[in-house]
Length: 338
View 1 (cartoon, rainbow, N blue to C red):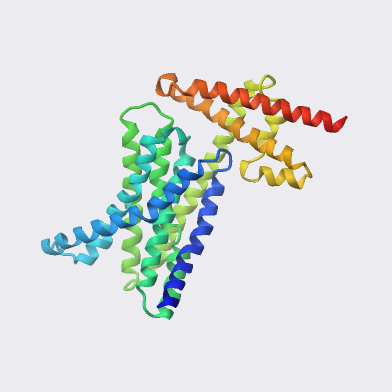
View 2 (view 1 turned 60 degrees about the vertical axis):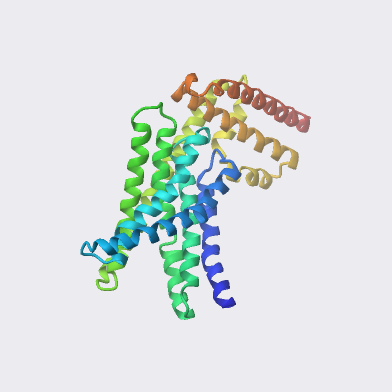
């Protein structure tokens, strides 16, 4: 029993850690708050999985009683699971949109939050599947399929919903504010449903497994392409909204530095160039605040002052902090060169 538990934990958790890092890395320019990222992951891992289990058990019996020509198990695979699970995961994104909309700066942020919710859900679901499998040889077959071959599926589905929320986060209120997220949720349910149908039929029709792989990984590669485009868009925001800050807030040298260096590896790059620890930390802080300044200016341009009265004071504060960091870095450079 202990070996089964240990194997289930390792097989569910280790791949998830890798996926979390990949998701975290995608948000290259403007970091999301760690506590909010953790909240998204935990929601998927605990409340969403519990809500799904309760709802699926409650809904399966009525389908059995109705006898609509399909068994309860087929109904659960084709209809109940995709709808219930995507709704349970989507609740986290709806909560983020309602209460922490200021932290969602576009499609990329929505994808990151959605993918983390999905990663948490997949980890818990996989653990339950593995521990329910008695034979070790069966576990050894099931684990790579669920954790690796289809390991990103739940992240992919919920990222679709997240992308839709991210799309409307920088748009003024209107019918599309909720229409787009609902459309994203429907698309996520449909993608989930296609996977369930093809894998369910694969035992009788092996070609269905190939189709399932094509659908899953094809969707993931499309999502990766969207992430790449979103990263380019964020880089453009930085260039465009910091251009008029030169030279009053930001020196030309640091303006170029902020554009070219993604936050994820900026500190490592600086250290490899032999810069002092104090200068590395100053550059890191300046990069973070300058990027945030650019994103806040973009949000103000898109939404207007009436959408968030706190934006203008935030921009003034960030501009002052960036100018001070820029001055300190230039002073440090002049001292070192003299």
